[in-house]
Image (cartoon, rainbow, N blue to C red; front, side):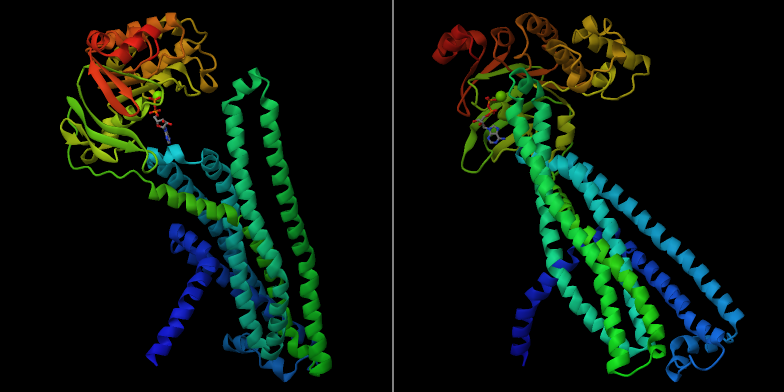
Length: 611
Ligand SMILES: Nc1ncnc2c1ncn2[C@@H]1O[C@H](COP(=O)(O)OP(=O)(O)O)[C@@H](O)[C@H]1O
Ligand SMILES: [Mg+2]
């Protein structure tokens, strides 16, 4: 027996799980974020439907009382729940008291309906806020390793377009769910009024639902297609904006625009198809439903030889249920239209959670003294080492320069140093403590990082330097002035039309490359950092600008730790230590003179100026 039960369970459990997953995964998703509120939303509809059902049921005693004869009142009607309820509440059958009672019921229904709609809105707004916060926080806390391999078009699209589509889906889902609860209430009431008639309606109604199934399925898969196409479109668009200058300057935009237009056309096609299905559903729905009711009435009167009066009350309730069914079908279809976005949102949130940076804070981070790479190995993809057995020591306030051909792993190495990437083997020690045991965010806040890609926010010059920290006290003002001088921002800032309040525009289009780089340096210096990383920071500048920036940087030598990835002689000549890298390994270390004397590769690099 137990064997059979087990077999049965083994067979049914996966089926059941799949059923729950496909039909309730959305519900679980909403429940995860709204908890008990989900049930409250449904409860408000239950109460509304109850009052509505009772309210319209009052039409039967109302008709009876106005007819004032017994012709309308068959025993079946006299026997129904509404009549029982009225005698229970000792309401007499007079027209006045029935009307007054009806009025009372509909006033209460109006109030509960208000609560129903308003509460759903409250929940929707709450849900949206929560999801947006979760995404922004999640994205902020995600590992850098996830970021560099993620599809940014998809990420952007999810965080903007998909969220909005998902919110619309939320609304439709709960509208449908609420209407569904109402249908249940009406059907139960209709059963109480006339069971036989109700069963007939239900059977035929369920049969007609099979008709819709196929269309629903198509709508659902189309919705997913639209999401995927949206990601691609967004990705293309952001590349278009990002590389706009290049595409324009080389007149290559046409090729790229053709790609984008293709996508637009694909999206249009899918959306048209989806709209067609929606139109078929909307158009066909009422016709089919009314046909069902007419068919059942014909059956009741002609085949079962019943009378209209027997079914009057359940007919009224079914009529109510019918409009609720239309609401369910309408909203369910709209919900399915956006289900791709909901799924995308779910998987994105999961992805962010799964790739969250693990913080394992065991020791406090003291003022920076020394850092050490111990046999560090790093790979972006498994079995393909980019850094191989790197051992290296950097002391506070030292100036160190990494040189080596492109692709030798310099950027990767400083990313490990900055706690952006983590070694697959070996250890990075900061003040003798493994980076895995300190708060890596605290470590990063001691670091300034400047690359060739200038970071300029679309804001004022001052905010670009202070990162929105207030400059109010005398101390802050003095520090700010000092930073402007050190970075040589002061040499151009006051010539701008609005001085420090000048809006720098998108990506700082209003500044020259050298000016932008000075702003970047000023920003890092304003933070009071211990260690400044410059990854080919001046590579894109002309040599005159570079020299002037180099001068500002030379002033920092001995003040803070400087880590250069450099390609010009002027930058590395004064370094305390130069590390020569090749294919992910350290080939040699020493001062400029030492390396220039003993290392042939270095000599060649110096003579050709190819760092
Ligand atoms: N996100 C990444 N995924 C996979 N491989 C990468 C990634 N970034 C860099 N690499 C590879 O790692 C190697 C070292 O790159 P990088 O550290 O940028 O070199 P460098 O800064 O010395 O030019 C290169 O071969 C490059 O192709
Ligand atoms: Mg590099």
